[in-house]
Length: 253
Length: 253
Image 1 (cartoon, one colour):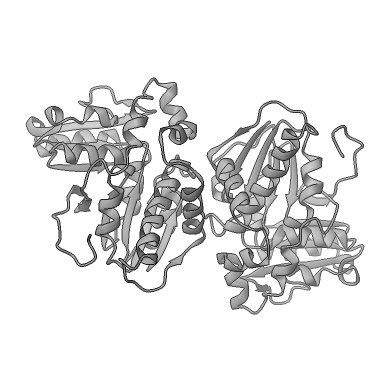
Image 2 (cartoon, rainbow over the protein chains, first blue to last red):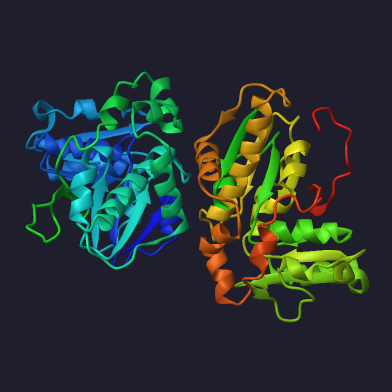
């Protein structure tokens, strides 16, 4: 199994995801929101780059069952239905709705993943589900959204937690695969996952966490920090993210 | 003291180094070569982006006392005097010479550092010297060259070793400064420096180390891995890197 981690969407844009399973990570907060929204019964999520694209797409999908979601500088876009806080994506708000979503860094990471064999959304909220869903895939590309083209500790930590989960299962014999090959970023991410507790306190220390505190959204952090809150795997096809139907695949324990 | 680390020249290009001391890191191998060459008595080093620029500059400086140095894909550029192996930069080869140097990633990192208050070259070979030279500077920008716009473990590790050195001196009271502020990359780099031995074995595991092995230059790695082999601080002014005259600064032990 080869695991290539990219520490930002920019790094990933220069890479090649062809034939790989791309796993997009934006802990604070796009992929946390995606997991939460799908767990709350949203039908599908459509990531878009600009707010203008989002409005155009929502209008073409039909505004009666489509919600406009997204943030700029952490706050809800003016005129949108929802922001980018996982706490907003309750069953009351999103069940059976389609969500058009425009976020600063997360959407860019999904765009960088296009061309991959599969594209999956990962956050702390669905670590174990993703770890099992990708276990049979030989080549993984972990795409951290990062912050404006740069490394984010929260995303790197999440990448490291997934690698640690796979490593542990290889070591205890529950996952059979070819020898693990890690690029420099994967090696570093695994080390970070071993060094830092993956909890609210660590998220608060990150630049993304500090930016949330600065706009009064610190209550999002304990939500984003929950491990395995949901047992679901969001997968993107044709620019649309939905829950992957559960497969009775070998190796799933 | 605020320490901002950038994990690649690309990250740094988007940043702002104005008013900061920029510390350029390309362990394998540009900044290791720069330290070694200056220790061997080279008068100055001129980093250039392209081999064409290098040839033009060498011709304008005068070819009799100027050497053309540089690599592409790890190997010496055809027609150049020297490659990018620290073992080549002996006193016999470079004493009293000017060196025009074109390397893939290292030069880009120096270009990204332009506009900084000071620009310094760091490798394992001169860690302590740089740690003392920058101790009185309030804002540091550590610019890892990385590999083609991406994170390199060797450079991040070196950044972490410098941060660890400064942290230890703050903790033991030999360096007085304002509270230490680290960006996400600096926090991660410090963690990596605590997790990995900074030795030949670790360098061999990195992508840059593997690339050297692939072209038969693995003997460079034990040279690049030596800590504090030289007590000198290369500093760039007007695109020319020379040894900083030793200052009798407070805090230097």
